Length: 288
Image (cartoon, rainbow, N blue to C red; front, top):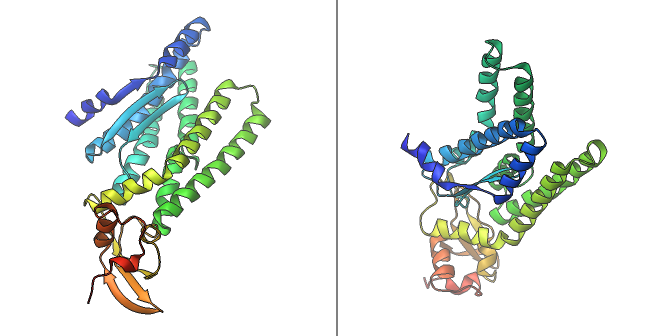
């Protein structure tokens, strides 16, 4: 219970949201807006409470004029089960909210108009969040899936490219069916900015992923996955082969023959502690 209440300290309300609320009062849409904000808040609380349960580092829970974002200070080294639960904890809230709304409606506690609006808002947010676009929940699930198959930086780029394609398709949908919907265009701009920002931060995200592995914060190493590299390959190129959830023995070869095997932490130590950022992997091989 303490963890539930603790997440409220991370809430941040964007100043423009108060403007939107004022407009809602003036245009007689205040109750609809309150319903929408309630649904979004519960959705983000779902993410935050699940993250807090697993002792994740929560940066901020932002309520925006067009939605909400729960930001976590985690970098791809948490167990797969934890990540899936935290991602799905948001969409899962809509299920119980719709069941409760149906119960209240059937028993006369909710009017038909409020019930219909509440259900439609829940369905829209639920389905929209499952689109494979970063930073939506569907985009995070996509990244999780690809990163199980591909090296971390490759998976990150593939997820962002897929997100761009998703935004293009969503934009075409808006142009065809609701071209004058201002909220839809604001959401498109937000998605494009988020993808662009994540792209600009891709190197930083990858470095944080490697650092957390180096300092022992990777809690799920499912299997050994040797990485075979030529001794002339640059050390940072070797690191770009790292997968999440795998422990990597680095097999160094010379003219196709195995020369030596290094533990991944030896390579990470050379890169981060010894600052050997622009050397060949063969240069850190120990004499045998």
